[in-house]
Length: 294
Image 1 (cartoon, rainbow, N blue to C red):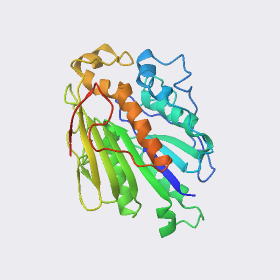
Image 2 (cartoon, one colour):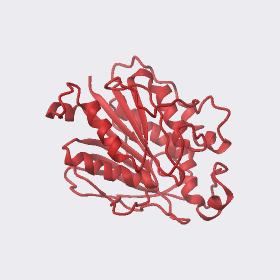
Image 3 (cartoon, helix red, strand yellow):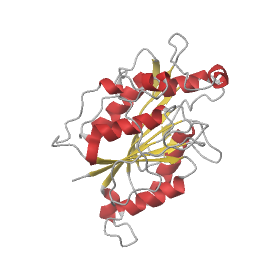
């Protein structure tokens, strides 16, 4: 059976979160924790629950689906977000994935400064014969998806580049309002990535990276740079303090946009059930999506 590795990432200004479902190597991560499902939680802020309202309406996945792949889903978080911080949609989305894919999925979250630990854990999980090295077969067994918001999106590209050095392929990278970290390049997608997509907005103190391109166009397909706008369609952001909402609202609106989360859920599911998402034309995530460039 093919193993799927998905990386779910977030870079907020306040922290680290972690959630775990199952493991390839069976050893639980020391920071593993469980939080309430977004479809059931009553303690999360309304904005966080609203961010995942469309995701929670999705039909439950048949876990006996003949084409369902095993998955490892990893998240990069920023700052000091705690594992049970329900103010962040990324934490609840990880638990949604846990519930949606059940025992077929391993879910982990890391701070965006914890990339070395994430890479160490990943290599250990891929090293199925525990000989301390990755064979060509072990490297190829994992279909990797890297996903992130803000600093986490920047870390996604850097992490993909780290995997390139190890000759580990990446199936898909997803960036949401990517904000480049110091000494990182968040717009050039390395050649070990098969497909990449970018969502961004242009307002506030931290506008997102508006354009990603491929280091090697013969090996990487840029699915699109999708420009989101919220001037005429406001997204609830009461999971952030007033100052953040006032000066950097767009950056938090795209993070809380239920259409974006629903589209991401579709992307992940299309990978896990071995189907190909259609990016020819405009994805159905209106009214926020305004332009797409390749």
